[in-house]
Length: 104
Image 1 (cartoon, rainbow, N blue to C red):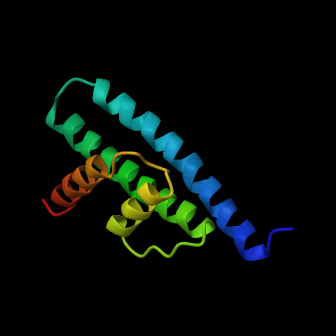
Image 2 (image 1 turned 135 degrees about the vertical axis):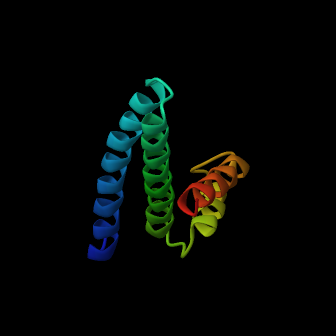
């Protein structure tokens, strides 16, 4: 039987995953809208939400596997190590884009 801490980590990962699914659908909707300033701002915000939930899901999954992760870059690296993602370089580009939008 799994220990309580691991079960809690798995439950957290499931919640993050559900939120990510919901937010990614909202991002898909935003991308389809006409390119107004308002819609551009909404799309950027939704991208930021998706990225944040993505790296947090990577982190949660790595922690379930017993790996320590403390940052988005660390989560991306470890997610690649365990085979959760197959192209960490694109995720680093997403991170750079998120950092630009957050600090703009």
